[in-house]
Image 1 (tube, rainbow, N blue to C red):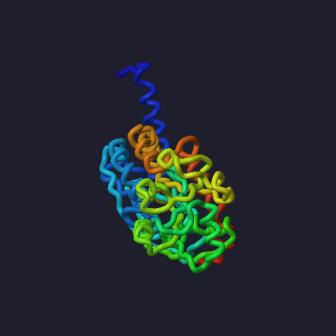
Image 2: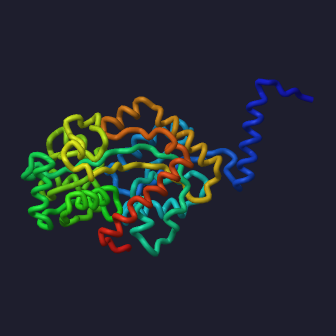
Image 3: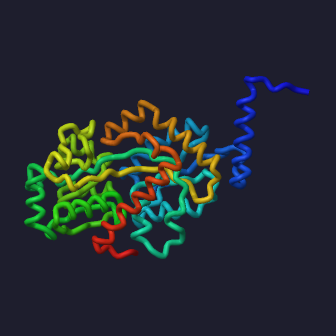
Length: 330
């Protein structure tokens, strides 16, 4: 015979509730995680998504009690990485460190081996403004002058991006739309390669997340004309916003989000979300993200339901711009 004390009652209620949720969702692991978690990044090492993924991985590992291993599966605008996660067993041990690319894949790509909207959102990780940048020798001292050069030179200028559907590709489309002039888009396999060519002077322009260029902007190895945020970035206080610099139509933010394969049990998604929320409260991580011009996510979009709604809204937002650009689905 035993007694249930007041102190023990909440734990019993929690355990019963968890067991009921597991039964409702199917077979969740009895203990999650039971082995290392692989966090897949759909872009090359050194790019903005990879940088942030490697920042948060140790904090997530501490919360989960298992190593979190970052795996780069780059190519095809982030779809190779997404396909790797889509094909994984839906038990939470393989997750996707996603980006805005996950909002473009449904519009840009066809004949995929996976359903591009069949992911379980875990939570938004961070948001980051885009910086309009150029080689150091580009003949413009500010954004107004840069716009004038682009309108004059047009397709003679080249603008690099990390591949069709990447955040930098979308930024390029939005920039051309805001200026009203097309330039030659040059796709690379990753953002780090774009940065290399900008610094060497073989590429004219870029439009990339500040997580990938804040250091180069501060060291003046490239030019920065504006950031596409409502307010200046803490890491780059001298760089004006696009609204301040005279191009208010140019507004966007990159973002990163954790996803699990479709069908992952709700208790596992919730466990991953709780680990993410604890990670986002880490003051040291917050400072490091701010140093990169980014900021940790907050509010409803850090919840699974809020993140899922935000992701679907982003798919709807970018679909018309992609279609208007004439980009042929692959």
